[in-house]
Image (cartoon, rainbow, N blue to C red; front, side, top):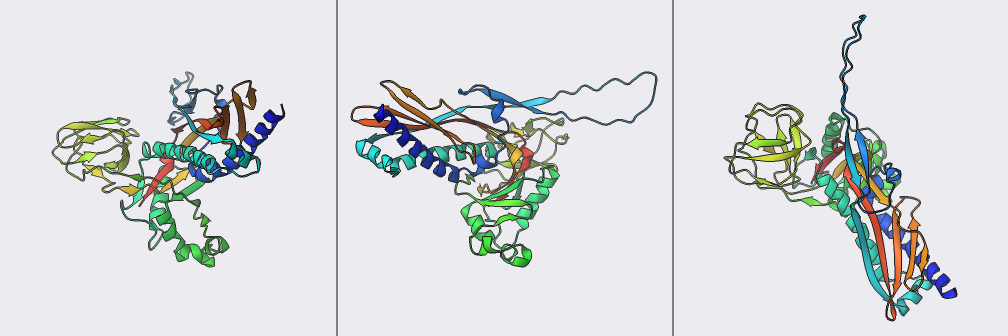
Length: 380
């Protein structure tokens, strides 16, 4: 019993130190809307909650009459948020490593295991952005904020046209874009709202309607080789997602590319060649019907860093708490910790093997793009 108590305390120490590392890595995990988490009733893989999306309701003139007019039916849709990801980061620890944990020293291998989980979750959330973000500002391949804030202001204008809610908004920059932004007088001078956070602490903070954050996990999108030369074929109704192409051009459109059709931009869902007549699948569906001659414009003409202006309702994110603290006779121990600041659920499982212990951190989570219009790239 005494040995079991010591091991339980060691697990608590390791989990607590591990959560500090995990919290530092997850910018998108802290930004995404997690209000749906409590609606997931089962802490098992593929448990799902359907997020309702209201249908558009049209207005009409009021005309008093003895017979009431027919009520227009609406059909709300839903977006599933499923706990699709169950990931673990296991490693073996000998008795020497166990004694180090008992003295409050976190083994480097445990730190690396936690870091691996954190990076996977961050990249998983970014993959949802890549697959759904359809609005962009800036020039692909050119790091923004070298001379001014025009890229952010253009992204903000796009966000407002997309009806992005004003608060809370976040600007997530990679290391190069943040370095440029920190050098701008508009952020440094007190007359523009600069101060100790920028000059002394090197943190931009909340400026121009967004909280500015730096992340080392901002990905780079590899764009297709298509530039111009193909057009839409045939009439396509509003909401259409599969658009026929005329061909006659060279290159490819890759999943995640941003293309323009008429006055609107869209995200390419799946890769396609444009050399022969074919079709491209887009998201969201067409905002305006096409007549059949509109050119397909490639907005991401070069690979670009996915610096992002985002509002919390863009992504739905959920983590499920796994089995709480328990001792399994003859097998091992499981311990659960919930980080009070971010709500991340992380389990540590210890199993005794031959002269060593296997330690495994694991997490169960899922995410969905709920409102893609609440994301705008600031391409770099």
